Image (cartoon, rainbow, N blue to C red; front, side):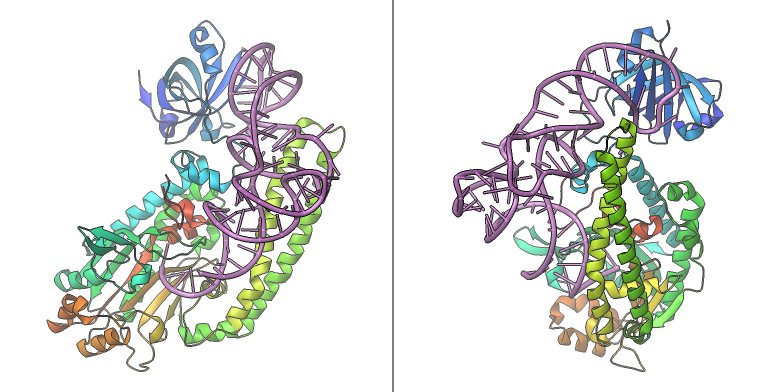
Length: 501
RNA sequence: UCCCCGAUAGCUCAACGGUAGAGCGGCCGGCUGUUAACCGGUAGGUUGUAGGUUCGAAUCCUACUCGGGGAGCCA
């Protein structure tokens, strides 16, 4: 018995192999059954024709429940028309584990149901493609820093006191004392880069922000490189090279997955150096100026027109579906189309409701404030390559960011906005390396200097210019795969109000 | 914390003040090339919870719970 994986079937045409997997879907008629098998490496249709050889298990085969686990033996045959390009003519079948009433059917399901069944949901094709890209993204993140002379430093998940602000932290009872789940490893990698030069940490990070949006998780993965002797431009150069490397690798290894997901690959191919570099002031001018207004007005009119079109088609299809003398398959098709149209209608209505608000937010943008989510989307959509936004007002940024020498109201920080409206995927800065300025900032923020003694030591014993950034894995993956929602980018999403399964 | 939307069969939805339905999934039967297969039959409901209005409520009103999206905050 030769065990094969579906991805390797092209080496085995004409040979008898055994596949081990799960039943993805089944169709049967009286004397032939089609079993679509899934083995984690791909899908393959296995054909069970009723004959003397298959007689002992034919009845079993045509009654198998979706997701039954199976060992299927058969002869590999090339068939261009089939998924994966191959088919198996079955000669033997072993049921490893039965599956009765599998909850996720090949029909449409609502998101709440799918999230409750997340432990099964990622057996589905779309989720499988996404999580495969995630695995490569994570590998490339590690690979990039390992290749380029960075030392991995694991930072603690239990953190004393706040890194930036206690309101966004989860509290844990640590032998009777409150400690927090880390929302960043940054302060620790700063210490480490003074020992190793170039370092990075990579792991889960936790934010207790009460955000219910498509961009937020309470538990997400972040990689944070930190570089000694780097100034802001040094940090930006690394971020640019790093992003290019990630995009190249994903395009190289996952073109088929991206195509399945419907990603506009040409847009990813444009991700080349140099990225745009603008200042916070430039961004403010764009938001308050005519380009942002034009973009949103155009949005408003195209989406209004589209909504009318969608509504019209819904009415037409509803009438047709209720009409007499149409075939069952035509009715099914109409119902499926109606389902999609209604979903699009819902999305458009929400967008149209939000656009005027977003226009106002942009037009009245406070040049002394942080960019909001909708502002980032606007800047992002006005650029066809990733865009660095630098030099934010000091007050809206963390205490550890380096004060700008020319304009002390600003700091040497950078956010990277992904194109296509995906917004912020990187936040970073040059760090404040001057002890006195850092102390001043700690006081300004109302923080207790005693909590930061060890951090202040880094400025007492051989301080150097240094900086780094954090990249959010899930937001990056959502952008790479062209997903509407971040919850599909992590195997078991943790969101406000959801921590099952 | 605030704003908008929603909750009907296992799932996706319909019924829009007057007898709770369909498709899928399940079960039974039919069909040798299906692609979300198809055809026939069958089981499946305290309409999220608690009040209220009404002769009559899935439908109208109030509160709550849960979910979706957005603001703030952020990767």
